[in-house]
Image (cartoon, rainbow, N blue to C red; front, side, top):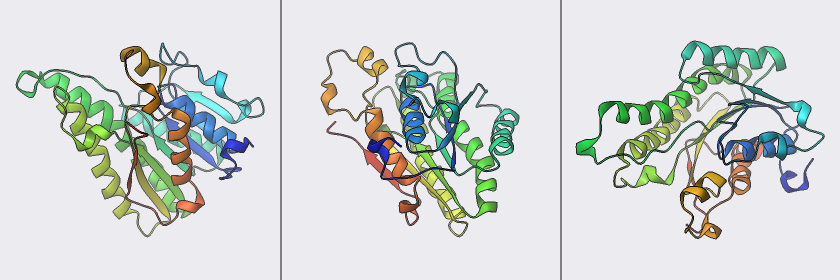
Length: 247
């Protein structure tokens, strides 16, 4: 086990991580693999153009504990299949990290096309709802589980020309709180992380003049997720944890 993640031991546990090939996803996958988990990632083989491939981040002794699945995360039937297949293959599902989402700085509210508004809400909310819906049933039946959703600092501040994104990420927090209440007596916890701008290659390319030393790295964010997914966080549910770095 990587000493960097040795605080939490996920040996024998299975994690499903969505958005595995995005900016934050590879760091999440690497952290859970290093902590001993078996990981099913939902993403694409190509990943994001500017980001480091997942395979480059995995420890040599952990590659056989990782499977990458391509799936339309907006399709309910396909999501149900991905969850069912993960359980069938590994006989359990302990952790779900909902990392699918996307940012688009669009237009002022008065000039926002309906399809632009709907796209942001769909991309940032529907996968989190669908994967949680199907994973929570399995976790409740086993009386143990951890769901961690990825929101954004933007959820707390209506930013100019980003109303749809901010509204969607606020919805992730509200969904987290509601699901935590519903699962309160099930042994399953549901929490959200609320990062600021994460220090990814994509964000650096988009903001070349920014002070990136103030941004949290994917590895730092992943350690917060590991805690929320661990036994140590059994009393934490319904929380939205700020992960702002110094931004």
